[in-house]
Image 1 (cartoon, rainbow, N blue to C red):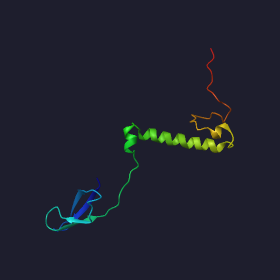
Image 2: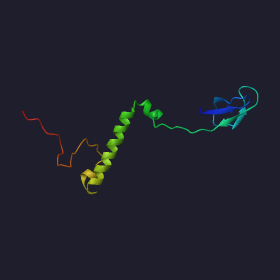
Image 3: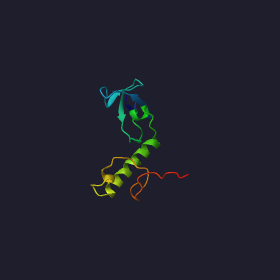
Image 4: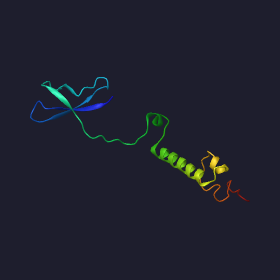
Length: 113
C-alpha cells in the first residue's frame, strides 16, 4: 500500500504525517490527524533503488546472481555479433564460459596420464 506524506499546518510548526492509503482512497487533502483542520499532500522527490522483484526473491535470486546472468547474456550477444550470421557460433544460444570457438577450442582438454 502506498505511503503518502501530509503536512498539517494547524499549529505554528508544520507537522508531517505519513499515511498509508490505497490508490482508490487517495485524496490530495484529508482531515488533519491532529483534528484541527485539513492536511495537504506534501510532494517530494522519490528515490528509486534497483532491486529484486518478489518473484526473484521467492526463487532465491541474489543481486550477484542477477548481475552474473546479465553479464552472460551480454557475452552471448557479443559472441553472436562477432561471427558470420550463418556460423554455429552465431546461431548458438548456448552460454559459453570463455573463448570457446574464438581460438578453435571446442572442448576441454583431456587429462593425460
